[in-house]
Amino acid sequence: MASNPREKSDGRHERQKEIVVEQLKKTPIVKLVCEKAGIGRTTFYRWQDEDDEFRKAVDMATLEGKLTINDMSEYQLLSLIQSKHPSAIKYWLEHHHPDYLKKGRIEKEDPGPSVIILGDEEDDSKKDT
Image (cartoon, rainbow, N blue to C red):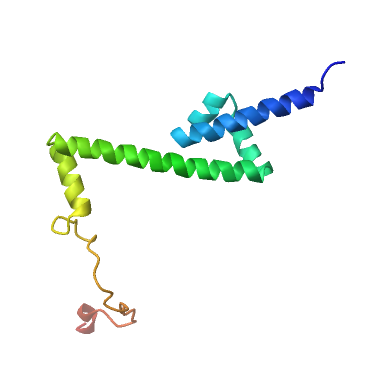
């Protein structure tokens, strides 16, 4: 007796979903993950729409992947700083040291609401005519 082809397909799809989730933890880029799992992006998004459990697993895996990339990026930045790379040093200081923060990034106390006057006053140059 032949087995149900639908069951084979479901088993293959479940394995592909597992691959997607595992790959998102390493590289949170849907296009790359779909290529590794052997599925199209349309299938990926359809699975997310149809399967709440898969969607939640994808969300968690994507977050984990982004945190991993952030950690790797910070490590690389610190390596560049240790190698005395001027742009890396400048970047770090501009984003982490209060004396080097770019204008507009300094957090100040809220001065209160801004007042904007939108009037129908005549232009001073027109008053003399």
